[in-house]
Length: 186
Image (spheres, rainbow, N blue to C red):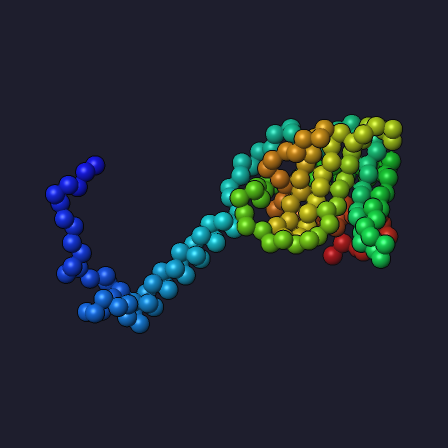
């Protein structure tokens, strides 16, 4: 697109934020700042708002039946470094109850949210057919920042993640089922 022969003159036009001398006035500066703050606030809310996710889960987001062993892995930091504490559960009633609690969690897509870096260690629950087999499903709970539970089916991460407002209390129930000596559920 050519503008040959056309002259564009901005003389005589005035920025609404500038006064007669062309300098930005205090009132104009305040208007620019207010506009920038509103734009920043709108962008922040858009990024941190929980997006709507389909209410129905596919079979990939569910912990399937068939587990006869549950592994609860909780890394802790001590003076010598990070240690991994694992509890093995073979009680079928407990395994079924934990599976039902996880499967009741709603979908929560944390992929497009702005989450703070929480530096919290994840807690992992693995479901296996036997003590000699590799867990076919793992659920990784991240309870800080933007809390979520990531389902891993046979080594592949399933998106969207699980979450919702009851994620922390559901995790506390699971922890108490697996380790009754843990602090009681409020």
